[in-house]
Length: 424
Image (tube, rainbow, N blue to C red):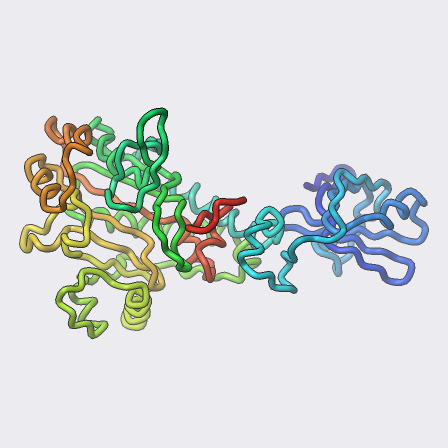
């Protein structure tokens, strides 16, 4: 934190570096993304020199002094202190190195995540993430969406299956929410028409990949009175273009620190049915109903080469791959009115038009083996007038990972949770 009044500086931050050149000492003090140079000359007071002689790296200090222009210093000025106060001491030996000059093994960095986050590059990631989320919210509010906050303690999973975390809820079994899916739809049943939520979702996936987290931030939205899934895709591409433009505009310094360049996409994004994607990838397996991670990556390269777009919607997934609430395609009931959005070969979104007709929804539950008694409350809403509707779920950490070309999704999570990590 730095404040300035009448050329007097008050700086509070962490001691990043201490250097000595002859009888002059230079203290680099770090405050968030900025670094400031404090100069201790030989004529500085005995009190200041004594304090400086006992400083450790990562001590928290307050510096009061005079601002002096110097183009060689960070920010174009240095600080000549009249007072230095140590606000908190740090041990003289750090458990990890978090500066870029020395690479520390990933697992150890996450053991000491609060220190790892002191790297300005890590802080820049989360500033960019915050700006993306706030501009997505701004866009959706401009489109008359209402933000909701659905329960995270639920009686059944939105997707069912084994990928749910059971918890003890007083004397009953409950689960952590996989997705706000069912509650988004209940909001539409309540007449809200357009809803969105930005919040945590929980998936008990035993995945050891660079793209999975057991707790992640999702941007989920649902809207009424759509005629096809195309309306959802149109909405998302406009939102992403808007958000990326805003991040590029507002986060110039952060993007520079992360050594990232944002390519603003042209809309509409390319669209390709999954059956056509298989052909482009020379896949002849007729029982296949999804793309593997490596196939998504390869498809992304092919589409970018053909169209110049880093984005591509993959559409018409088989019903065997999609949840029970997905609307089937009228022309071919083995397919669905659904899509995934890939960005640079990584799935960042799954969406679809939903089945809003009660009798058909019941049949699809039976087809999928979903016990209707476990979602009885949800199904009741479809007896009392559910509008034609659809929605999508977007993985925020995956967005940030692709935007900044991060090697691992864990870098985009504040304190990441994986199958092995519950601390810190």
